[in-house]
Amino acid sequence: MKKPSNKKPPKTPVHTFKPPLARQVRIIGGAWKRTPLAVLDSEGLRPTPDRVRETLFNWLTHLLDGNWSTVRCLDLFAGTGALGFEAASRGALEVTMIEHNTPAARQLETTKTKLDASQVRVLRGDAITWLSKARIEAGADTGRFDLIFLDPPYQQGWLEKVLPQCEGLLAEHGLLYLESEFALQEDALPSWLSGWQLLRADKAGSVFYHLLKRQVHSG
Image 1 (cartoon, helix red, strand yellow):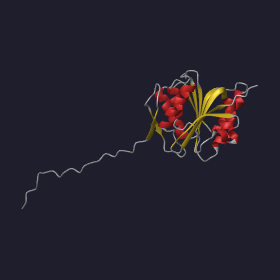
Image 2 (spheres, one colour):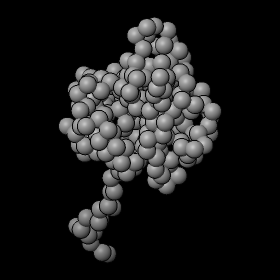
Image 3 (cartoon, one colour):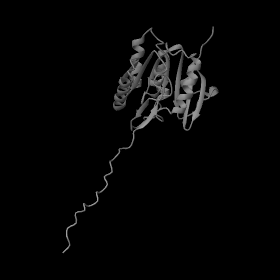
Image 4 (cartoon, one colour):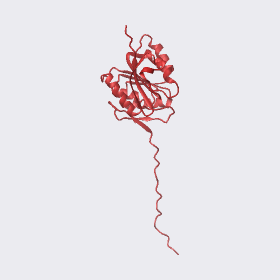
């Protein structure tokens, strides 16, 4: 009869489950350079790619002569806040973020707290409704924003609905960033861009991005 073995059976290796890492984008420059921003898995949430933001903020810094300290920003369809937090990181005086998606708005608040970004204000709401109310409240006090970021979900006709309402809230020499699934041409702008001048435009992958300002009429 065999003696029972004193050897312990080999241990079955236990593999610790690691959840997949959440998608992230990073702030490109300024005080919070390289800070990651979480990208929630939510329909229509499409953060502006790093390459696009780098080019855009090079344009803006040049046009603003690097003077971010007086710039008041409106980030409509804020999403991850990549554009608004980038502006705040560069020293923008104020950044107002509008986001309709509740989880995304909560994430924006979390990021604001993490960065101690007191110059950032996060508001949950529909862009059209908020713009209509803001224009009424502004009254004669128009031009409250020097820079507006407009990066809505694609294929839903948001640009032509929202952009006309931005006019009264943009300062006389203010700038408007517009991201879309199609290119804009200076000599063939759509009717809803009547009165606007295309300053810069570029493309990265399937993203077309543009910088505009209001036309100044002489006389």
